[in-house]
Image 1 (cartoon, rainbow, N blue to C red):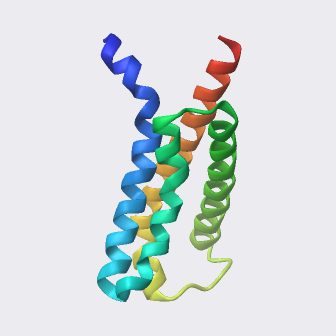
Image 2 (image 1 turned 135 degrees about the vertical axis):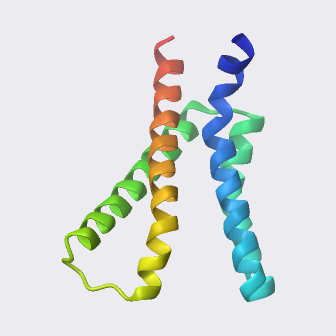
Amino acid sequence: MRIISKYSKFTPYLYFLAMIAYWFTDVNRAEGISAYPILLFGIPFVWQLIRPSKKLNFSLGIVFVCLSSYLILAYLFDALHIVEITDRVKRFLILGGFFVLGNFIMSLWMIRNSIKKEFS
């Protein structure tokens, strides 16, 4: 149990790195070499794994909570049919919904970890 609790703080970073790797491979198949700048998004998460920083951790958590909240609102607007969306986008929304929910949960987990470090 100690091992799980010791390494559970790395779960959000590994999740976001996995999502960046998935995004990179998906775009790389379609676009080719122009997908390589996507890998730059992984730098802050790799940095957190190597040299954890409270400020960077909290900043990443807040940024991704805001982005995820924005995407959750987009899903609500789609569900309420406030904005018209094409069929291609609707197909993407099903898979993207899992990513948005996962991003929101992992962002809250990062904020919780940084608050827990701050008060302990």
